[in-house]
Image (cartoon, rainbow over all chains, first blue to last red):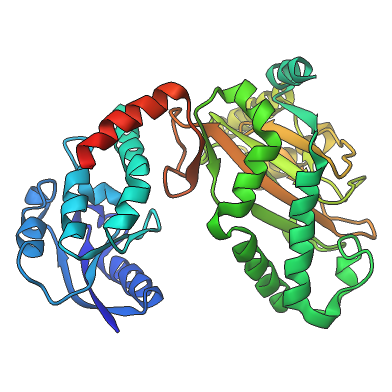
Length: 127
Length: 261
Ligand SMILES: [Fe+2]
């Protein structure tokens, strides 16, 4: 069975509380034939910079990948951090975004979806 | 023909479109039939679509069947892609070359005398005002085996009235009664053949009556918008996928993509 870290969106807590987010993450993990073994959320002050996440994935973790609520968690200064996505995948982790129902199992998936990621970033800028 | 369609779209907010490549439309219908055969096994009857209500399955099983069927036809966005191919010409005339299509095509099955699907609503909001719905009946429609549409003028008249009533603190049941009766009375009841589509703006109110005919109504709906126009709550890439890109978008994506090679 695969194991994942879930990254909750603390800033979204007003609409989707943390227990609700937990259910979504667990449900998504089970669809991937896996389970959540650890759950984190960025401190709101640092969430944009994703300091904790960056520190985490660069250390050698015994997990298959990370589950996020949405790509929105990867937006920094109105831009999607596409390079960060690529880097995480290059390290061999999977990345999953529930809202977009978007799963990257490997860098090959990234190459297939890179145009969608660029468009997502550009559309977000104009909002 | 296309000019006539656009004229009607601007004036009424909708038009009836005659599908040119019926083979592609037939492919969708055949695919639904084939998948249904697999799911329902021995229960298939003659004149499957119109006579669907005569198949003996419970409501719960019916729902399971519909969900299974939708999952099948939406694998790899198969129906969405086919839909774009069928309506490409008119869609490009309306939106230009940068087009996104809703990934999951919705399939609606309305059996006779089922009041649970009665509805009067418009799609935007929460959908985008910059979006079109392509409603494709898979069987011929007539009388109450149909969907009714309120044109642009009547829609705005009705919305204004409803706003006025709400401001004057009219009782909500009274407002709803008025809303339903105005919409059902003033809406157009077009007969559509299989091979035609009702293409309408998301800002229009439309009505689904109770099907009181002796045949089941089947319909698909597709949604299209320009890639770069504002999105409703259904966003990119969660609900929409790129169906076509203009040359300039291709250049921009190529340039930006090279940063991630
Ligand atoms: Fe609708």
